[in-house]
Image (cartoon, rainbow, N blue to C red):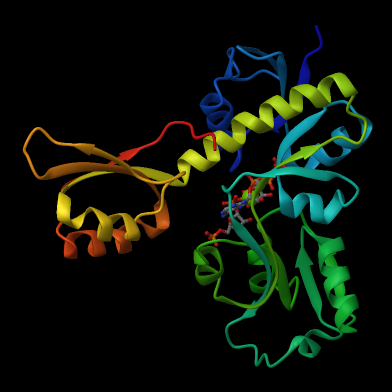
Length: 285
Ligand SMILES: Nc1ncnc2c1ncn2[C@@H]1O[C@H](COP(=O)(O)OP(=O)(O)OP(=O)(O)O)[C@@H](O)[C@H]1O
Ligand SMILES: O=P(O)(O)OC[C@H]1O[C@H](OP(=O)(O)OP(=O)(O)O)[C@H](O)[C@@H]1O
Ligand SMILES: [Mg+2]
């Protein structure tokens, strides 16, 4: 039987969440630590632990069938590689930044300047579109230090909380792109492994929907059910069950995680009591 080969980052920002999402899909990796390759239980899959930056080439060559990778890396050097799922973790921006005292008004201010970056293609494309010419210095890490040691006038790198920029006395002036972890697919994947990919995608979607939802249970007097049901969304519609106490019911439904607090206030105003909010493990619509 065929096995689908997946690449995940060996160590770094994506590693832990990549292992976690596979685990939540019921796929556990056998002794992954310090190995280049590992087998899995419960799914015909082989895991390769690779550097994030090397993964586009492995996908292109068909050495691996699929990979969990930062979208920014695909934009930089894997535009020919397709994305099957967006995974909603490792969210970040790729931005241009300059020293705080740089009088920055527009992108034209970078014309003729030196920019240090690990993302030369992304910067060149962005500047090209704006008609700006700059001199690029490609470095592979600690990019934010470059202006302070006189290597460059500006930088382009990943920004998340902004604390690395802050610590290096820099300010973000242009957001070139936003990124998150994605499931990418080799153009050389076989038909047999495409079917395994579909199975995996089905599981990932169930996990992501569940992560984004809460199961809500509450009690309400029967004369309030209609008003409460109007507030509540549901997968089809909320479940209403009678309580042992006459005149009262229990209402159950699924609510989107980021809408939950708002709905809670409305529910209380309508007389809901004993509200419980529970995590959902998997969700199939
Ligand atoms: N501060 C951050 N916050 C959120 N996501 C980030 C952050 N830094 C990086 N990422 C995302 O995680 C990916 C991996 O980053 P990480 O720094 O672990 O590896 P790397 O040095 O880019 O790659 P390699 O595995 O090739 O050494 C990045 O491509 C980006 O998508
Ligand atoms: O806006 P922030 O929240 O500060 O995050 C941004 C920083 O995070 C990443 O580096 P990382 O910590 O992965 O170190 P690395 O340079 O060794 O990859 C990135 O290269 C930035 O330097
Ligand atoms: Mg990094």
